[in-house]
Image (cartoon, rainbow, N blue to C red):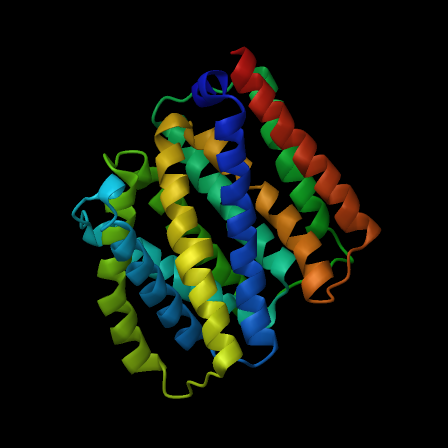
Length: 285
């Protein structure tokens, strides 16, 4: 990975921060929904609105003074990802949701890279297989399975996020593009809320969780991720994101009281080992 060879620890730190933020989104959403602090549609709407406001204000800073760059395709992908993500989390745990989401992202981004000429070295291939095998361990007989509807919604969310990451490789300015995507996603969110938000409810805790998810774990983190994407191959970018289910599993145990079994621990160890192998393969390429 060229960026790791040149940027060293600073780039690695940015990647870690982005992955932690992605895992935080799973936890914040589950906290809001599991505790009945907010419904899924309202959470998604506030998440997109708060992200748009935070990014617009960020663009007003002298060091980042830019006009938002608008792209309706990316805005639609972002909205599909956010709403399908929240709706799926109504009936599945943080770790399982992240597993389905980023497992789908892995297939979408690696497939796209392969179709467009990315060739995998033996080491990188072994790393990707190990990371996927670690996550697949959670789906073996005996593991908890989500409902079909929730699973399909999370897979749809993963497809949208994978496509969003692929288009993000072509942006010229990460801050302007991310802000534009969130701003355009707000009217889409408003339409969805008007059509589907008849049973909406929210308390102060739910609103705070949604704002934190939107402004920090989404807006700021997606800006950071967009700035990294041009330096990452699709296979590497998607494999790095397989760390998120592991982080979500640990966070779910600490903050949500979700069980962390021996199978989960083994899955985390195998997945992280595979990711480390992919990073090493890029550094020695």
